[in-house]
Amino acid sequence: MGNRYTTVILDRDGVINFDSPDYILAPEQWIPVPGALEAIAHLHRSGIKVALASNQSAVGRGMITRDQFAAIRATMEQAIATAGGALAAQAYCFHAPDDGCDCRKPKPGLINQIMQTLHTPRQQCIMIGDSPRDIEAATRAGIDAALVISGHHAREPLIASVHQIDADIPVFANLEAAIAALFPAA
Ligand SMILES: [Mg+2]
Image 1 (spheres, helix red, strand yellow):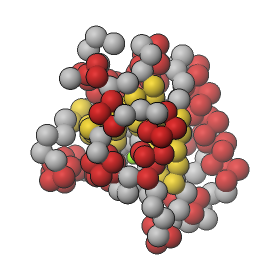
Image 2 (image 1 turned 45 degrees about the horizontal axis):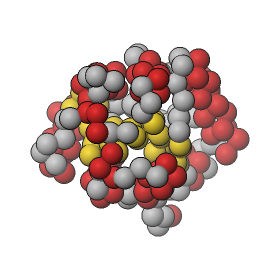
Image 3 (image 1 turned 30 degrees about the horizontal axis):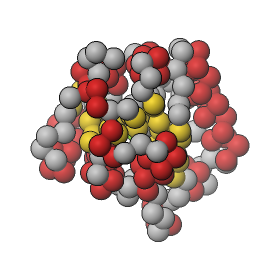
Image 4 (image 1 turned 180 degrees about the vertical axis):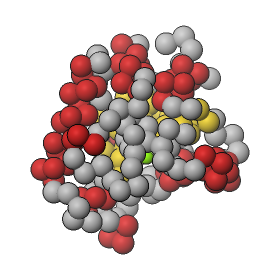
């Protein structure tokens, strides 16, 4: 299954770092999920591009400034680099839900941006997210998807709603387990 993917698109909160229903509002709240940074580094060393597609409506809601967002992003980039990884592309939606944008997941805009930026055909992309809207965005963009349950969503309803979108979506405990299963030879 795995080695046809050349690009892995990750959600941020609940996948790379622990999520909070109260949003991630400061660099010290950005705490990596165990094994996630190493999984990104492993992909990077294997020549697989890792990208990020993340809704950050805390900006559009006025909960944090662009500068505060940039500080959180810098903390993440430093942590990824220290582990030996890198992100080939990052796409963010800063809009609030009622802004009427076409990028906020479950819309496919962020994923489409990344595929254009990296020139990756859709058959070579997989999205890994912790929320039904990640999976729906992937489906609408025409790419594969996998669910991780390392976010803050209640497990059983989460899995049920994702499997309502597509009953074949694989489910993993976290990013480390997803990458080990999807890229066994990488
Ligand atoms: Mg998330």
